[in-house]
Amino acid sequence: MQIDARPFAYDFDVAHTALVIIDMQRDFIEPGGFGETLGNDVSLLAAIVPACQAALGAWRRAGGMVVHTREAHKPDLSDCPPAKRLRGNPSLRIGDVGPMGRILVAGEPGNQIIPALSPVAGETVIDKPGKGMFYGTTLHAQFQQAGITHLIFMGVTTEVCVQTSMREANDRGYDCLLLEDCTESYFPHFKAAAVEMLRAQGAIVGWTATSAQLITTLK
Ligand code: C5J
Image (cartoon, rainbow, N blue to C red):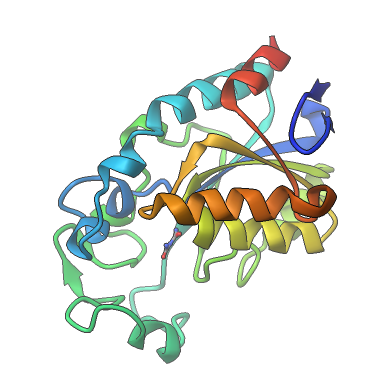
């Protein structure tokens, strides 16, 4: 299959491609969660949910592999370096109790994927302690075992966990495509810059396209 992507056409086949959904967690997307507590307008991120649902629905119908990631630490925080915990808002750090449970801790209500994009049986769910999806996870081995060579990305936030994961994937040899309308940042100019730099210099990190382009291609 081929998508008329930017900066040039992206070729893939569903059997060797995974749809990767980065950190669409309640704490980042829902009002009253960690993201809002930090002073962010979460409605910006919530606005991409319908496009994500449409792309995920089409991908599921096509029978492709689906991976959901969560930024999540163990309850004892043994996988959270002090440098990460000490960064950010001193009154609400990783592991502290926030509006939806302990911040970025596995199993807490806010750490769950939003109901609109809930994983279904057979889909892979990865808890990652870092911003990138390969750091401290078995995902690369899982992709190799499944014969995955291409990755299509959605999720939040564009310039943090999405971009880091795409860069990690690019270095491991995957051909990566980002669905532009299925990713968002609390800072729109950060999203715009991240999208530009990922596809610059002849797709130095990867390609970009829209969910509509993917859905049309899969039909
Ligand atoms: C993600 C973050 N998921 N911004 N985390 O991007 O800290």
